[in-house]
View (cartoon, rainbow, N blue to C red):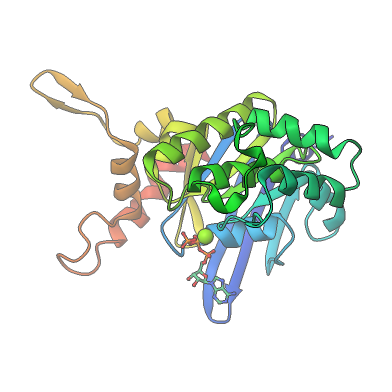
Length: 279
Ligand SMILES: Nc1ncnc2c1ncn2[C@@H]1O[C@H](COP(=O)(O)OP(=O)(O)OP(=O)(O)O)[C@@H](O)[C@H]1O
Ligand SMILES: [Mg+2]
């Protein structure tokens, strides 16, 4: 077995343009089995484009992507059996109850005992009591958890969550985070995209930052924080927050002021500082 078959996701040189807009310009990253990997990027960075390519909804212009050992370009059906995508916008049926939504998906996947599968997932996502209610009455966090539960039917080894908590209030976000952590504890590989730095900071084992079409850093939170030296103020060591690391790398710290070339220093210095991350 080659290395790319032992990894959950292996992406090399991915490129994608929409007309003249070059969104992905050579994206490289790998996701080890198990654990939570966050793909971090600003609005329009290309996160959804990456996850659409990984889940075979979109074809790359160049490069390779291998999911669970299967190539997205040549083994699309196998990839679709291996990965489940929870899109940026919840895809639950409002008219049905939570339980009915789950049973419906289990039936569509021709699984035995759809009722048992539904009850088990309701329990895992703390929705047992709400399971008999129409989804129209659910809060945003409950909807999101149901959406994630639905994507787990059939036990895919890899699950992709595209901005799982965008638009949720703090309590609902914490509920979704808890659900995602439990997923990872059960052995599922989770790739999530987010524009929230604290989400990546709290949830992910590894974080990659997608900026101007490339992954500019990839590492653990501790590794990312080491990219900026700690500031010492009155004998108290202040560790940089992920937000500081992110803004320093993508160079948006002083947007609106100054010369208009404020993105240049960070994007030219970042690869040099992070070259150790990509041996
Ligand atoms: N089908 C399309 N046709 C043309 N342009 C597109 C298409 N899909 C995406 N884009 C553009 O490609 C860029 C990347 O989009 P993408 O949706 O991948 O970004 P994103 O990182 O997911 O952003 P967000 O955080 O807002 O969800 C954006 O500039 C977007 O406008
Ligand atoms: Mg998106």
